[in-house]
Length: 367
Ligand code: KG4
Ligand code: ZN
Image 1 (cartoon, rainbow, N blue to C red):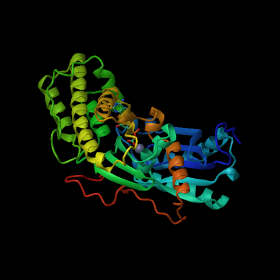
Image 2 (image 1 turned 45 degrees about the vertical axis):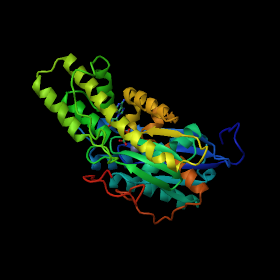
Image 3 (image 1 turned 180 degrees about the vertical axis):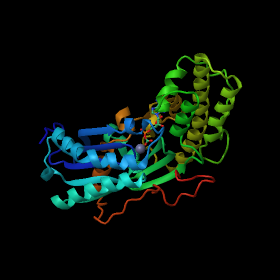
Image 4 (image 1 turned 30 degrees about the vertical axis):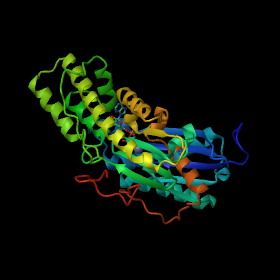
């Protein structure tokens, strides 16, 4: 087994499996009795090339690709960690939300390994795994405010503890990553759209186009990005054909509008959680999801956190995007809290973290 210096003896070792979308991932994470985590291995295989031809993730292709490579990835994760199946304390797999075919592949593999080795199985909510990652990377304990911005989700969460989340806001239409991807597509930029828009914006003027700031100043706490994307389309149509400079200016103006809109929503959320913070508790604001990699957005978020005396944290990029370590860590946290699942745990393509949250008007499957 791998050496674990500065670590309490006998940590639990959890294998994590992630197959909810187009990344196949497996990882082994250790957690000691004091709650300190360590990543022993983290293997991710992106299916990006398999879907590129179709301009989006094709569920059937994703499920087949998971089936083809998951066993090899699990083997690799165990080998890189220097851990044998018999050393594991539990197996965790993401069982929702996500694409049902992929979820079945990961959950079934995880259950089979748990059954064969006689260890507990942990059914992990993918959003909970994103939400708890800051505990693994930065040792941050709840409560804290969380912004989850990915291709499928845009949510502000109040993380009260393992298994206890209050959803403060969600998107009523497109997720933020989706808005980046659609904007990239309409400007003829390559996928994934977020990094392409960010790159183009480097040479652009963020003040050239006066794009709308969705939801700005509204008391309703939610996000909306569909109108902004449409405004980019109209602005582009007016000056078509687009020069490279036009595209750069549109991207920079889009990012400025996104940042202003998100900033306004985050300020509202921080004000709403201030009364929930115990006296003297650290003020932490955590971001995760692929869009949290965006530097313009990060700079904005750091500034807002500072306004309210909050520390801003975002896990390193490879742990912000989908991975197995976050699933293993969420499993280790749930195991420590005694929240073990049976082998009959279902997969749930829709699985809100806060079932009590009111449906946001207009919110579809992403709520
Ligand atoms: O979390 P993630 O890797 O996968 C899920 O959606 O679960 O997020 C992917 C999304 C894509 O929409 C991608 O365009 C966006 O994150 N993204 C970015 C950046 N890097 C990735 N958006 C803006 N700026 C970036 N640098
Ligand atoms: Zn994700």
